[in-house]
Every structure is written in structure tokens, then in C-alpha cells.
Image (cartoon, rainbow, N blue to C red; front, top):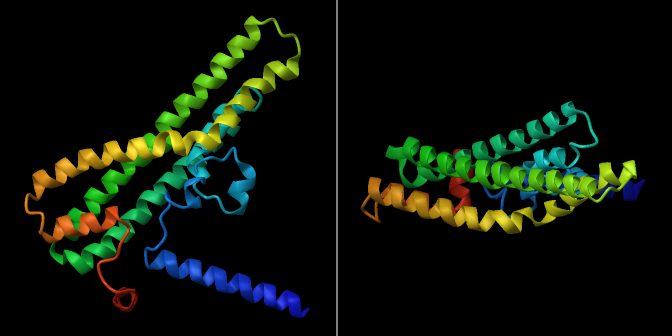
Length: 225
């Protein structure tokens, strides 16, 4: 019983710590395991802690398209978009906190640019490119299996799905950094055009978000929260 209580208390402490980090905007959903929530196909990591794979739930659906009902694929896309929407909203929340501290007269501008930037990144790196990649792998591997004259129904059904699933762990490595660099470069030009002064509060607030830093001590933020 004592061990059970200790375990329960430990879980409560961890949950409380995570809640505090979320409220204070200290969780990054792409640089941590949260990135994997986009990939529903990775059921075990999703159910445990790898939240980032949720963004790739649609790719799981694409992988299983040859062997599951269309509703399952649609559900996978729904989970992916739910993750993406939540991630973008959370980035907007963190941007609002930074803006209140660093650029109180331009909160909407900071939040708007941050949300737009994150939405474009997620739509491209989590949805568009991975879905096209997995769909292409499944489609052409299925055509290859058919061309080879393989008669086994199981192989014809499951081999394309297995190849598609096998690609999912590599998706963040393939797309996250290149897409992030492209989006950062584009928005850097936009921000410089809108706010030429590098020392302007808006530029500083936006720059702080890029490096996942806070503009004020945690104690100050806690008071506002």
C-alpha cells in the first residue's frame, strides 16, 4: 500500500509539473516528444508519451488505406488536425504571454504573426509533405507487388502498409528542419518589412519566440497567470 501511495504521489507531482509548464508556456510541441503525436500509426508511442506523432496520424491512415475502412483513414486525419490545431493554439497562447511582457501595445500583431507562422509550418511539415510521402510509398509499392504477380493476399494487402508505417519514424528528420528553415526565412523577411527597427518591441517579442525564451522571470509570469 505504501508503494502504491508513493507511486500515486509521484504521478501527481509529474502531472502538476507538466500543468505548470503548459501554463507558463514552457512546453515546445515540436522540439520534444510531443512532436510525434501527429503520427497515429505509432500507437504505442502515442499512448505513452510521444505526442508529436499525433501530427502524423493521417499518415497512419494512409499506410492502412489498403486494409482498413475509409472511416478509419478519416478518423486518423481528424486526430492529426486536432493535434495541429492544438499546437497552433498553444503557440498563440505563449506568444500572447510574451507580447504582454515585451510589446503590450502590439499583442495582436505578435500573436497573429506567430500563429500564422506556426500554422504554415504544421500544415506543411505535419500534414502535406508526410501525407504525400506515405501515400506515394503505399500506392507505388502496391503497384509493384501487383506487377510482380505475387498471389498471397496477405502480402498484397500488408506489405504496402508495412512500408508506409516503416517510413513514419523518419518523417520529422526529413521534413521538420527544412520546412522550419524555409518558414523562418520567409517570416524573417516579412517581419523586417513590417518592423524595420530591430530593437522594436514587436521584433524582440517575435525573436524571443524563435528561441523559446521568456521575456520576463517566471515569477512575473506566474503573477499574471
